[in-house]
Image (cartoon, one colour):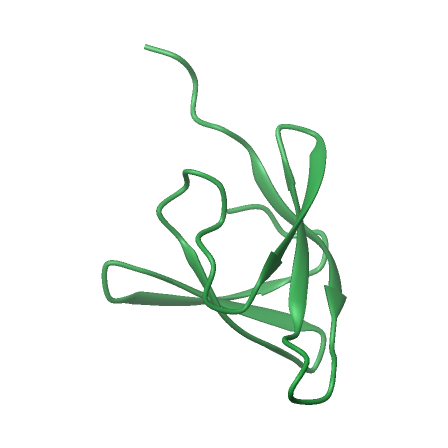
Length: 72
């Protein structure tokens, strides 16, 4: 089987409503932008919120706080 993809939070884009905040995740070294509510690549994780220099992600009921530079 192929090795699992490497995911890391590399940046946050905090915007005021109605503009959706977003997070920048590096997936296997390629940075991509994901808006709140979007699935993060094929990781199974969904971006829930962005605030105070952290991203909140959820997968199958598990919720995690991810900080810039942290992998998951």
